[in-house]
Image (cartoon, rainbow, N blue to C red; front, side, top):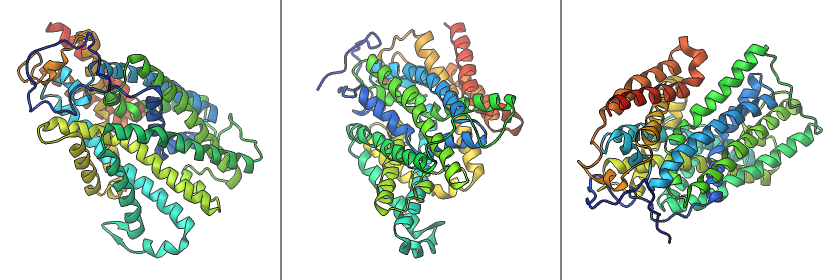
Length: 473
């Protein structure tokens, strides 16, 4: 066991921690076991999932060539890389999770606002991601054993029996992993991220062989004008920024476990611009191959895998997709609300209890009904997602430009100490910039600018918060 080093961001203080603000899970990390590979594997777990595959494949179907998709996403992931390093540095230096980091800029109790916003988004997406994975597993199970089809003919609360079995099985395994804490998360994601690479490479080799090894990287299924190609290219980069804005906000939940900043930067480098764009390119190549082989662009890898008439392959594929989805859910949608809910009532809610509350909530919202409602996904979750950019902008400017990295970590656990209960300047900045970001993301009139809502929210909140804070210094 190695103790977290004391940095210049941490100043010793004699004030005892307030039980309303402190517990062992929220306290600075005592063990720093996460190495470069652990962070690299974290990104593999987060990126290697059905949603990101479909996103990259969808860009190809919309008219971008494989090469254009690759460069657009590489551009987006490079920006994400730098954003993750900024938030990762704060987590590594202070050793505390996201809701405690939020206390620096929003106040010791005001931090519950960004924590709850992040938690609600994560809980809903946790349920939806689990449901989407269960659909893929159901498809592959039926391909393995068509005799189970009668289980799909009767349902309860909008989901048939086989769907319930697959959904609850995935839900239970994920919950079991989380009850064992962050060390269990590290060990699980160390191998689940690479697992999907094995299946994806095998799927690519199979589709390339079926297409006689002649897949074009420059052609696309839809002809676009040069201007439309440029718009789609920048839109793809903007959307990937918005997608990863969730984890960019709370990346400190993971970087707090790294022994030094070099470890964080190296893990992010191999996991984001390198691994993530490689996975996106492979997704597009497989989709292009499916169009050549089957005459249509198949953007769902589970549907494509079901066309492989080989039971052992289908079994391995079903298990791998299940593991991949558990990886992204645990990384992106489970760790954050576990800490966020613990922050509300530290005396009674630990990381494990917060995780179980999140899991039960994700089950109770009946995610298949949510996903079937475009209004809920687009307006409720999309609106909440638009709030993440302003939160990120405020926190980064406050730490780097206003405080110059000087933070008394112990005082973050003291009521009435160096940090206010609520920072009015942070709230005065957040509400108008969050409203601006949400309007751009959701109002049809601003549809051409909607892919950039996260960036606009981040930039506007950063500028406004810097101006307001400088004025009152």
